[in-house]
Image 1 (tube, helix red, strand yellow):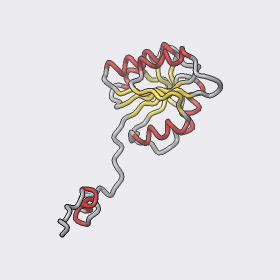
Image 2 (spheres, helix red, strand yellow; image 1 turned 90 degrees about the vertical axis):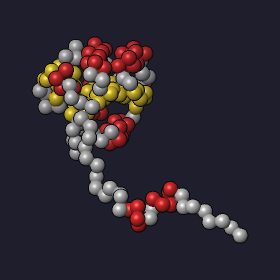
Image 3 (cartoon, helix red, strand yellow; image 1 turned 45 degrees about the vertical axis):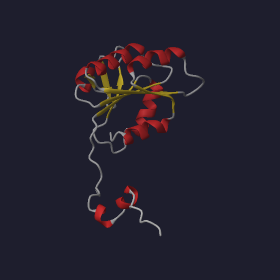
Image 4 (cartoon, one colour; image 1 turned 135 degrees about the vertical axis):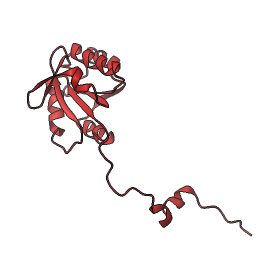
Length: 160
């Protein structure tokens, strides 16, 4: 005679009783994300997705020193003030990277314990070593090589 087997957690999760505990509305936007492009090619990738319906994501380019971020409308804002209350900073670059700017943004994020991620896009040819060396110390998460779609998917995943 076979002994009854207890219902698994997966089987229990699809019962009507458990359905009462399901969340049936979209999650609220929870991440204040700053996306910074450090060169023209990375800016083109960023502009390609900036018009999506993001929650608290803000998109910027950067001056040579990193002290000023520039909105997509061309307004210059102090970098430190702009990332002060953000949850994450996503850094985008190709071989045209501004190393001093990456260092300034990366250090400001580290001082504030803000999560950083870097996406290095390879447009033509190979990624140069100095590009990787410029961003690696400042990105806790680094995607090399990144595809253009990876930025969109990352922002969706972190609920930007």
